[in-house]
Amino acid sequence: MGEAPVFFVDNLQDELSNGFVLKSKGLETSTDVGDRTFVIGGANNDSASSIGVQIYEKSTGKWVIPTVLGTKPKPCKGHSAILLNEDRIMIIIRGSTQDDCIWFLEVDTKYVKEQKKVLGTEVVAWSKGVRGDAEKPIVISGPSGVGKGTLINMLMKEFPSMFGFSVSHTTRAPRNMEKNGVHYHFTERSVMEKDIKDGKFLEFASVHGNLYGTSLEAVEAVADSGKRCILDIDVQGARSVKASSLDAIFIFICPPSMKDLEERLRARGTETEEQVQKRLRNAEAEIEQGKSSGIFDHILYNDNLEECYENLKKLLGLDGSAPTNHKSSPKGIDLPLNHSVSKIDNKILINCETPELGNASKNLIVLDVSSLKGGAPGRTRGLNVYAIDSFSDGLNGIHKLS
Ligand SMILES: Nc1nc2c(ncn2[C@@H]2O[C@H](COP(=O)(O)OP(=O)(O)O)[C@@H](O)[C@H]2O)c(=O)[nH]1
Ligand SMILES: Nc1ncnc2c1ncn2[C@@H]1O[C@H](COP(=O)(O)OP(=O)(O)O)[C@@H](O)[C@H]1O
Image (tube, rainbow, N blue to C red; front, side, top):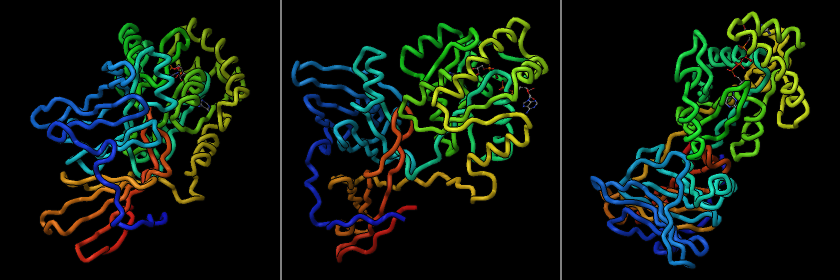
């Protein structure tokens, strides 16, 4: 359990500093980042704010509507905004569900800067805040027919509550047993190319003559289910993920020999002769990349399937020698609609008015943002939350919300 924050409740910062002032019936905030002002919120719609983003450039006096990447928070009854490290704005949603109240609007992070270059427009990116350090996603690559799918299915079957599969998009035609939305999102090339242009993909690549890609939504859907995300992607995709801020474990699966690989690919019976030849031609280069590119943390040889599977589980700390370190996703925080927000160093202090106990009574929630990890396009992890039950007669106890 981390050290509870040491501070004195009575020297809270004035609530009116940058970003805390709620405008237009509390549904909009404005936060200055350098010479730009980020106005977050939106038109009132059934007394809920659509959480839009507008940027006011002081130097030009112009308003800019940025491209907004990532899944944004649901419409809400208002929010507080707190600038962190000049590159992201923490948003605390009022009156939201427990696990949906902390979000980060990234305005100048590495990922946003990259996407600005790719898209050629002003960009901001949403990243949902999650508590604790969930398990890193797992990227598994390897030549066609090596056994990636077989090994992943074994993991998902043995640990159904622990792992979730990132369902890729592809322009490839479905195989007999493949279901749309389960094995892949089978997609028209024009649709996929538009979504890529709109920044909806974490990575994409042309593989064996078809387009494949991992949408941000696919990764987030697994994270939201509280499971550890498994991505089955090619070496090009692994290279892109490695360069992104999605902190993952990279595993390359090698065949015992090219002869074995050819036998397996043919025995699977899912490709035409031409496709088999193309995949085998690509396999040699992929294996070379897998071994020498430095992308992969681990290289596993899939000779005997059971042995390879045991080695994979050992890599993931699942071989029974260590307690399975699967942490059930911690609960969110119970934020009442009425709260005020202050910041002291890396501590965000949320004063929760508890009218039912009279105005004198206050609960304090402290968010420790000193060890944040990850961020868009994935989740922002490492948020530590403490609750301090304080009544008019002084502090009544500090405890970390587990
Ligand atoms: N970059 C990238 N590669 C992918 C993605 N989904 C699948 N692939 C890779 O595309 C290649 C072909 O996949 P598939 O057609 O299912 O054939 P398989 O490898 O024989 O199972 C494999 O190397 C996959 O790892 C993706 O979302 N992105
Ligand atoms: N260790 C192994 N020994 C023999 N056959 C295997 C082994 N691993 C997988 N296979 C078989 O090889 C074929 C390709 O496996 P698959 O999981 O589809 O590969 P990938 O997903 O990497 O293309 C399948 O028919 C599978 O049953």
